[in-house]
Image 1 (tube, helix red, strand yellow):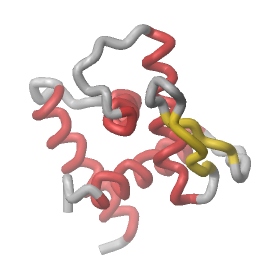
Image 2 (cartoon, rainbow, N blue to C red; image 1 turned 30 degrees about the vertical axis):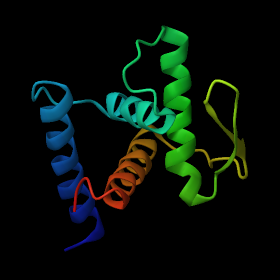
Image 3 (cartoon, rainbow, N blue to C red; image 1 turned 180 degrees about the vertical axis):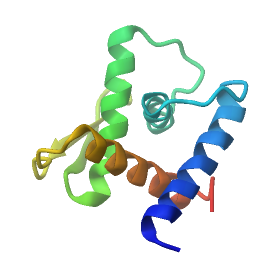
Image 4 (cartoon, rainbow, N blue to C red; image 1 turned 90 degrees about the horizontal axis):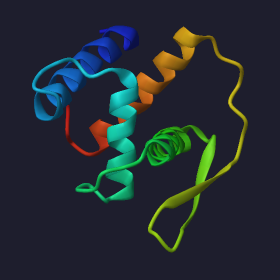
Length: 118
């Protein structure tokens, strides 16, 4: 199976599983899944977040997801328990489709590491 086909298959499995768990089976969009990773990484699951906090959660998720690629490095947790990352390497300029593939690949890897999907 080609790498692209495997990523596509795993992505579909991930979306289906997360959608059934969090969205009454309505397919979750990429941004929603990134948001879920942010909430997971923060660890404050049963909290209502304001708009700016939601953006910060997505930032946490992106940093965490791209950390294995060498773009970010975990730095510290602040007094409120929010993780902070430092930029190790700037992301190269990517087209929208390339960004989407990178994030899908990072998300699949994240959930594979946690044995959420196989």
